[in-house]
Amino acid sequence: MVVQSMDDVSPSKWHLAHTTWFFETFVLEPFYPGYRCFNPAYAVLFNSYYNSVGDIYPRPDRGLLSRPTVAEVYDYREHVDAAVTVLMSRADQRTCGAIADVMTLGCHHEQQHQELILTDIKHVLSCNPLQPAYRANSEQVADVTASMGWARYEAGLVRIGAGAEGFAFDNERPRHRTYVAPFELAGRPVTNGEYIDFMEDGGYRQPGLWLSDGWNMIHERRCTMPLYWQLRDGVYHAHTLSGTRPVVRAEPVCHVSYYEADAFARWAEARLPTEAEWEIASEGATIGADLLETGALHPRPTRGGDTEPVAMLGNVWEWTSSPYTAYPGYKTAAGALGEYNGKFMSGQMVLRGGSCLTAATHIRSTYRNFFPPDARWQMTGLRLARDAR
Ligand SMILES: [Fe+2]
Image 1: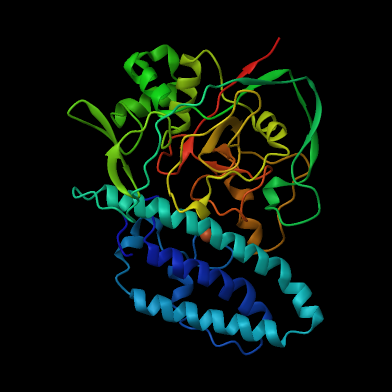
Image 2: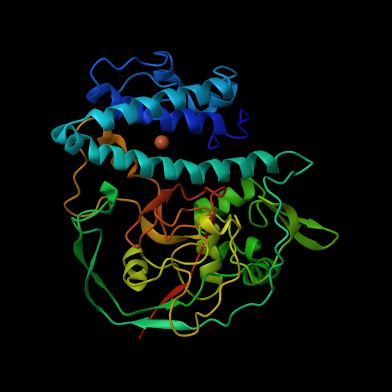
C-alpha cells in the first residue's frame, strides 16, 4: 500500500487518503461549521492537482510518504466518514440541497480511484520478479473466439452527450448535435489472438502502420507486445491481477497504448471509431457482464457480436480516435471543482465504455475517460470501425 512503481502509479494508501481529503476539502470545510481538521499537513500531501486549493506534494514522490502510516490513513478516513455522517444527519433542507451535488461527485470520484487502485496494484506487483497475484482466480476461461460481424450506421445529424438529468461529469455535457458519415462498427473488441497475428506479421516493425510519435515510443521503450506480456518458452504470458498465466487468445486485448491500437487498426484495414460513432452505437447497450462486480478482474472472451455490438460497457476501455476536448457550449464548474476535468483538455485521447475494473453504477454510454496516447497501464483495448459506402 506504500509502493509507487512509476510516476503514473499512486500507492493504495495515497488513493485512500486523497479520496478522503476530497470530502474533507469540498464538503466538510465549506459546510460543517466548527469542523475539526484531522491534520492540516494532509492538505498538501493528498491534494492531487487542485491548484486553487493550495500547494501540492509532487506526484512522482508519493511513494516516499512513509508517514502517515496505513493505520493513520484509516484513522483519517474514519474521522472524515464520521464527520460527514454527522453533517448529513444534522443538515437542514437547504444545506442538504447545497451539498448533494458535491457529495455525489465525491462518490463518483471515489469509484474512479477504486479502479485506479487496482490498475496501480497490478503495475506494482508486475515489477516484482516473483509476480505475485493480488487475488487468486481459479476460474477456467473457455478459449473460444466469437465470430465478429459489423453493424452499419447511416449518416445523419445525431445527438451525443449527457442530458441535464441525473449525474454526469461536466465533460459529458452539454448534449449537442454532431454529424456522422455512414460507418460500420465491429461487433466486439479486438482479441489477443488477433493482436498476436498483428505482432507475428511484423506489425511492430512496419513504419507505415505507425503514427510518428507512436513509432518513436515503441523504439524508445522497446515495445514489441502489450504491457505485461512476456514470451516464456515460445508461449505468450500475461501478468494479471491473479498472477502471470498464458495469454488466452479469445480474450479482448488490453494494456495497449493509443498508438498500438491505431497501428493495429491500420494493419487490419480499419480505423478506430470516433467518440460520436462509439456513443450512438452504444445507445441502449445493456450494462455488460464484465464489470468490477463479477470479481474476475480481467476481461473475458465476449459472446455474440455477429449482428450488433456487444460488450460496449465493461470488459476493456476502448480507445477512440477523438482527442479529449470540450463539447460545444462546455462550461467548467465554478470554484476549485472546475479543475476536475476541463484543465486536462489537451494532449489526451478519449476512451469509452468502462472495463472489468469499473463499477456498474459508475459507467454509462456518455462517459468520457481520457489518457495520454502512450498510456498502457489502464485496462485499455480497442474496437474497430470503418467507413461505410
Ligand atoms: Fe482524484
